[in-house]
Every structure is written in structure tokens, then in C-alpha cells.
Image (cartoon, rainbow over all chains, first blue to last red; front, side, top):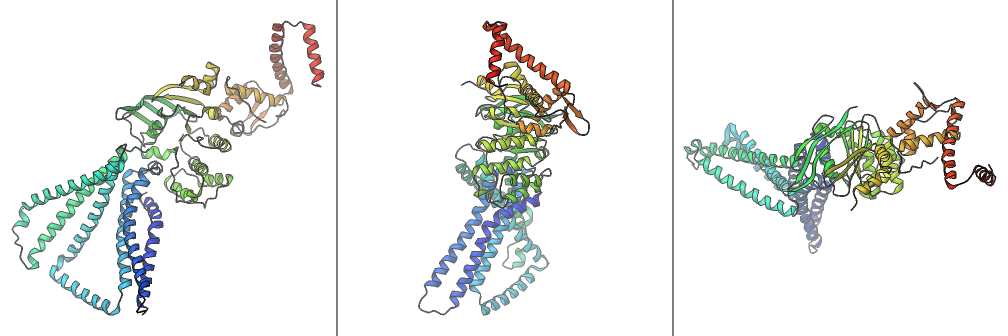
Amino acid sequence: MLKKLLKYEVQATSRIILPLYAALISLAIVNRVISSIPILTWHAPQIISMIIYNMILIGMFIMTFVMMIQRFYKNLLSDEGYLMFTLPIKSWMHIASKLLISMMWMVTSGIVALISIFIIAFDIIITKEFLHASVVFIGDFFRYFGPLSGLFIFEILLVGVVGLASMVLMIYASIAIGHLFNRHKILASVGSYIVLTTISQILFIIMAVISSYLPTPRHLSIANDLHGVEPIIHYVLWFVIIFSGILTSGYFILTNYILSKRLNLE
Amino acid sequence: MSIILECNSLTKAFGKKRALSDISLNIEKGKIIGLLGPNGSGKTTFIKLLNGLLTPTSGEIRVSGIQPGIETKKIISYLPEKTYLNDWMRVHQIIELFCDFYEDFKPEKAYDMLKRLNINSNDRLKTMSKGTKEKVQLILVMSREAELYLLDEPIGGVDPAARDYILETIINNYSANSSIIISTHLISDIEKVLDHVIFIKDGQLVLTSSVDEIREENGKSVDGLFKEVFKC
Amino acid sequence: MSWNFKSDRPIYIQLIDQIEMMIFSGIYPPGSRLPSVRDMAQEAAVNPNTMQRALSKLEEDGLIITHRTSGRSITEDENMIKKAKTRLAQEQLSEFLANMQHLGFDRKEILSIISNMLEEMKI
């Protein structure tokens, strides 16, 4: 069932975002082509195409973000909600499907942006140097962090994923809370977003202070040498992952509760 | 004589306002029931409760013996008053969606009805008139082999020819295993199609009776009785 | 065939009347097959249960027969149809004659009015 929901989510969103990706890549190519034509005096086409490229780039990111909000609000809490919530599907699946696909598009937008920049800035010599430098860096990295470097990369990715999920779910929770109000729903949503952000920051500070009193990391001195810092980095990362994970779950549970027990479609 | 719907002291309050008070009723299989009452009487609230779109403040609902949830959504086919379909979809896409999520959905039936009404399954919903969209929704709802159909104002904003088609479809879809609840305030049009009627006023049950009984006992149609009961 | 319903009597009774009329007037000849309950209900735009009730009553009265495998048909017993027809006519007449009496007409006047009407209507 979740798979089917994901399929429809992709169907609904790709028709909006894919044309933007196509436009961005096309403009990147156009920019590339124009900048390689040696017209020395007349810079206008290059400037115009660069401006358009930038506009599309910004537009793409804005659209990805707006789409995330819109899919949740319009598809679940407006008239379309009558269809969605009478399907024989538990409400958590609706949240999960929208969350996963929104996250997917956010990551994809980042990748597409990088690709477009790469297209514009592609230069064989620089790229060769960059690749060479990367290989060296990766070698150094693995040598420094030793056998646990894979874990380190995994932790960084996890922080990113959980952090992204946390942001999306906090927005969903805010929209859901706003739905509880009869009037001024948007205002209530914005208000609850502010409240949730503040609460999560306060909780973070409290947790950070508490954990600084935990025995384990304390006896490790922070040396200049990277080796001494290494376990602390792991602890810090896991602290962030777990803390974010708890907040994320909290937002999810809150949103699910509102959608399943306090739904009130107009 | 099995019961498809059972309500016991069903109450729904929004804050201080009581939208439904203490509704208790039973509906048998194989009946077409009219849920009648003026605007704001609680009909739509009642239907949303049956659907699981609202949770009761107190009291109980059982559809085929089960409380509203995933299992009841599988056997209830709901036609809301508004257009609830994704505007950007094409008709055949929404049919595929119904096929995917509803085991009892019969696409052949849907395509058949679409053909009869000259609706192109390749059209996007947003290009259609409101009346056509409503017909598409009705077709989708009636193409399911559900145990309980909930139709909220199915003939509301529709032209007379379409109204006849809708009533025809309702009669045609009749099965001794399922029941249909039609919520409306346009009684004279659908009276002949109903077995029983439920009158609701200000969230309370005012009357439940068969159409025949009303005519026999009162010497007037349900429409006539309604006008009397709900005189302003 | 248009079905007209009044609002003061139960629909199933009105259905019985209208189907009887169709039998008597030969629209449904003796022995002919009837459409399914659902089809008849659809045509009359009434609830199938109501149509079923009407047909059952007609079956009780012997005007309709249900065959186990092939649905319903009108009885072939033309005598029965004639009797039912006559009974209907008598019911209508008794109401008419009661009214006439009420208006103060006597036998001779009633017969002459009827005679004139028959001529006018070319029956």
C-alpha cells in the first residue's frame, strides 16, 4: 500500500518538478555554449542567459520547498483530503509517503543543481586537478580516521537524513496544528512552527548541557591532533542523530495523532 | 435480515456546539435510505462519522459489526458533496488509482458508464465542467461493489437529465447485499427510490419510517411531511 | 409508458394499479414475459424493493406467475384477467354511481347521461 502511495506521490510531483530540472539543465548547457563562443564585445547574451539560469536555479529550490508544503496541505487537508482519508490506508502512511518523496526531491534538486553548475563550469584541466586532489583527500581522510572512517561517513549521512526529515516533519506538524483551528489556520501554522522551533532549540540546549556532565567524553582531552578528537566526534554525531531522531519521531507522532483523531475537513 | 449499520447514542460536539446528539438507529442490508433534513441539521457530520473522517465525541458506530477504520473504509463507498479529485489527473488515471486502493472496484463498469455519458477517459479533470466532474465522481463511487454507499447530495447542483441518470444508476446498482444512504434536501425527486427515511433536525433524530408507512399513515408524500415537520 | 405517481398513497399500491392497467389494456398480454424486477424498477424510477412488493401482491392475486427458472410472466388464464378487469370496473362504477346518487340523479337520468357520453366519445 505504501508503495502505491509513493507511486502516486511521485506521479503528482514529478509533473511539476521535472520540467524545472529540464529547464535548469538546458539553461546550463545554453550558458556553457554561449560562454564558449568568443564574442568579445557583446556580452549581453551571456549576461541574460546567466540571469535566467540563476532565476531558474532559485526558482527550482523554492519550488521544491513550496511543493513539499503544498502536497501535504492541499492533498490531505483541503478537498482532496476527502479522497485520501477515505482510502483504506492508515494515516501514518500518508505522512510517510509525502515525507519520503519530499526528501527525495530535495536531495535530487541539490544533485541537479550541482550537475548544472558542473556543466557550466566544466573545464578539463580544472576537473582533472580537482579529481586528483579529491583522490588525495580521500586517501588522507581514510588514513586519519582509520577503520572507523566508514562509520564516520555513515554518521554524517545519517545526521543529514534525520535532519532533513526533522525539518520536513516539523513543517508538517505545524500545518497539522494549524488545521486544528477554525479560523486563521495559516497564522496558527506559522505560530506553531515558531513555537516548535523554539521548543526544539531549548530542548537541544538542555540536552547538550546534560550530556556534557556525562562521564565518558569528559576525560578525553581535546588535542590539536585529530586522533584525540575522534571519539568525541562520534559521540557528538550520535548525540545529534539521537536527539534529532527523537524530535522527528515526536513530530511524526503528533502529526499522525492530529490527522487520525482530530481531522476536521471542511 | 442483517444489519449493515448500527449507531448507539452517537454524539459529536465541536467545542460547545453539538452537531449530533444521541443518534441511535439500525439500517438493514438491501435498503435505500434517505437522510433528510435542512441544511446544517447534521447530515454531513453524520456521514463523516460513518466514514471515519470525524471521530465521535461519545457513542458508537458499527458498520457490518466493525468500528470505523481501515476495514470499514474497504466496504464503504463515499460520494462527498464536493469535487475531491485531483484536478490534474486524467480520468483513466483516477480509475487506476481506485483500482489500486479498492479491491472491490470494477473498472469495466466505470468505463462502461463513462462511454454511455460520452466522457473521454483521456480528458484531464480540470478541463471538465462541474457537472461532468460530478458525474465522474458518481461513476467512480458506483463502480465499487461496496456494502454501504454514502451519497451526500448526489443530485444537488445537477441538471434534470443528469438527475434521472443518477437515480437510474442508483436503482441499477441496487443489490440485496448492500445499502445506500442518500443525504439530501431535494426529497420529491428521490422519494420513489427510497425504502426508508431518516429525518434529522438540529442534530437530533426526529423520525425514522418507511416511505410506505408515511404515505399510509399521513396520506401525504414524504416531501409533504417533511415540509410540515421542518416548517420555518 | 409513463409512470405517474400521486403523493398521497403508498407507491407500491400505485404500482399495482398501473401494472394491472397494463395487463388489462393488453400492453402486457396474457402469457407474456415480464422484465426483471430491477429493469421494471428502473423504468418506473422506483425502489426495487417497492417494485418487488407490488409484483408479489399481483402474484398473490394470481395475475402474475413466477417460474422458477425463467422469471415472471402474466397469467395465461384469460378468465381470471377478465374477472379482475370486471372487478376494477365495478369498483370505479360504484364510486361513480354513489356520486351520482349524491348529486340526486335517478336511474333514467344516469343511463341517458351515460348514453350521450358514449356517443360523444365514440365508444
